Amino acid sequence: MIAGLGKAAQVALSGLQEYSDHMQKIRDYFEEKLKEALNDEVVINFEISERLPNTSSVTFVKYPGDAFELLSKCKSFIASNGAACHAATQQCSQVLTACGIREQFALRTVRFSFGRDSTHDEVDRAVSELKAIIFMGKYGSSLLNVINRGPISDF
Image (cartoon, rainbow, N blue to C red; front, side):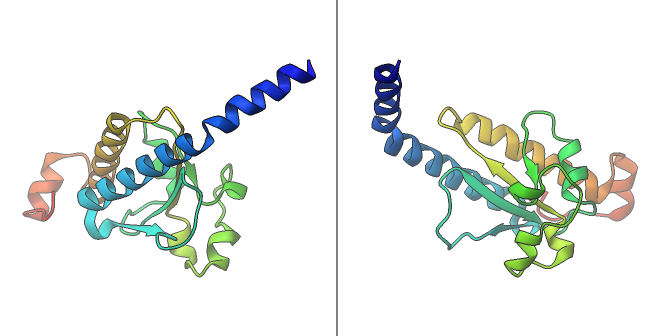
């Protein structure tokens, strides 16, 4: 049994750098696509800091609700609100506020994680869904709401 555990650790370690590189590429692709789709609607937190290769912290700065509400509308993927230690609550993450993120924005922050099997197609679907959720949150679901507010830039 110990030999089997050692072999399993050896196999896991042998692919670790490859998995890490893949997850970082997927994370970076996600952040690029999200910024393309939502422009100034999002802020990628800690973008220039050293961070885990599979995790992206995103604040939806212009979304009218909080991250908990936004995530309740997501159907094609699962993510967490705030930071890991507050993922199951609707409270403001003390980790995010300690990093200088104001409470109003910390409440609109979502933590996305990617795995070794995550694909560009999955990222594209998630970004499309997020764009639609942000649009609906800002303008409502009725075409009349959109018509009454006039032309919508960037959508």
